[in-house]
Image 1 (spheres, rainbow, N blue to C red):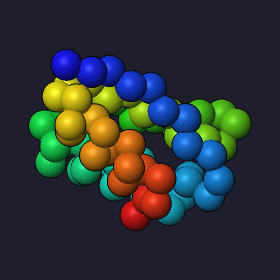
Image 2: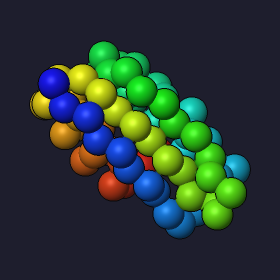
Image 3: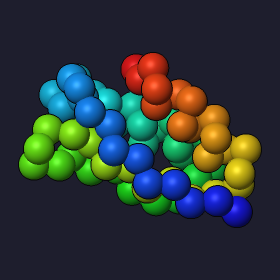
Length: 64
């Protein structure tokens, strides 16, 4: 098991990033949350199999 907290900056609010990240995490069988932050970033907590968390981290680098 692995847990990872990510903060994603840039143009991530108002473009469906949060919904996309939730869909990706669910497809990988991960638990956690995704939320918008007041500073315009998105915060993501992913918990699950090491390989699945690593795949989500890679996907988040390029986004939807």
